[in-house]
Length: 278
Image 1 (spheres, one colour):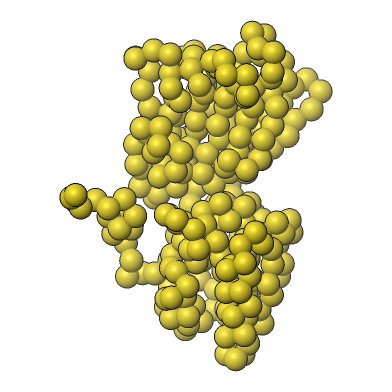
Image 2 (image 1 turned 90 degrees about the horizontal axis):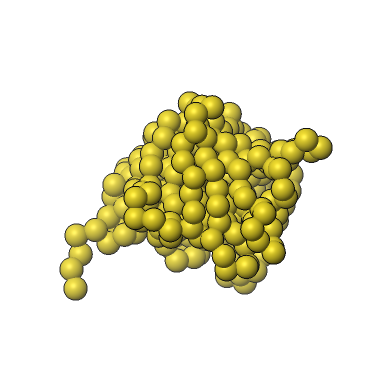
């Protein structure tokens, strides 16, 4: 745990006026407590020299910021200005109280698994980082995607349908959940493999060990438009013939600042309204 937490970056969704207003208010509040605070749009590409970050927005803002902060090992706390906000630890009404607890050292850090996604051909390769998921689909042509999957060098299956999603446990409450995938506790290091509208009744979501990499080939021969890979719903890559998609557990992990009194199952009950009727 970091002992000095007086240099703070305030990332905000620059498409939301509410987020900019709250960022400026927090900066003034922190300055009164002797802290150095810098306001940064979520489009920031390079991690500044800070002790921790506050992230104002929804889960999309957290996902974008995570790809900058996680490689630098900078802890982050989310302040939810969106809808569900699974990745956010608090809201604007309670933000001051929780930020004060961070400054006082009363917080925990959870490390969340991330995906390393490499798209390679004989000529080039590109690697991306994802906190939630990686989606392979046929693009805008409306036809089914044909994807072959291998794990640990062993053939797994051929998938035919709208697409195939690989998610982390953190991403299990995002797109994967909407596609009828299981909810997986974020302490686990596993891959969730979720077919999107499979063209068969026999292919179901799977939970696989992250000790073995996954390898995919998307059939590009039967479509007018090339297939697409979507990373955390924010980065898109057009799959070219012959390219191989390799997904492994990244050495980089996101450090989430959390309230030690607020537990994961409590969050699920609150966000998903478990047990409520009517």
